[in-house]
Length: 166
Image (cartoon, rainbow, N blue to C red):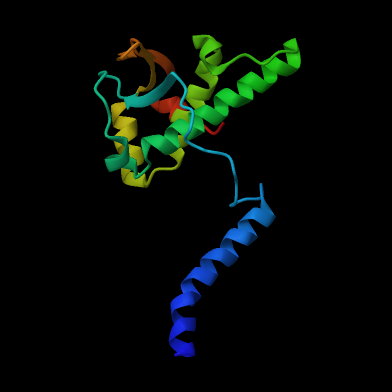
């Protein structure tokens, strides 16, 4: 009888033990009190790749790189630009405040990254579609509506530029 009672209490005792550990550890990864998805921004953006004819290129199917990964590469480039401006001017601008000229470097580097991180057959397809263009589309919430701004060209590289080392 005691053995069966212990078997029934084992899952509860493990849960209580983990709860105590999590409370003791507090803000150390992967244990955190921070509610990750409690407050969404009212503005974001997405990026997409097009060839010289303006038609979208199916990035994931062709290169096995997901657009989410490509956005992260582009985003880290934007962060570097923001950091440079912050060091030079004393105040770091928000990403949405960057001009198209300031976005161009990270956009071009993202295109180069896509090319360099693709398999050879995909690289040839990308060269055939060149010049490659990276577009950014800002998305925001206005009232109860989702509004997409017109696309912005943030990167463009010719076949020759793609094959050059940075």
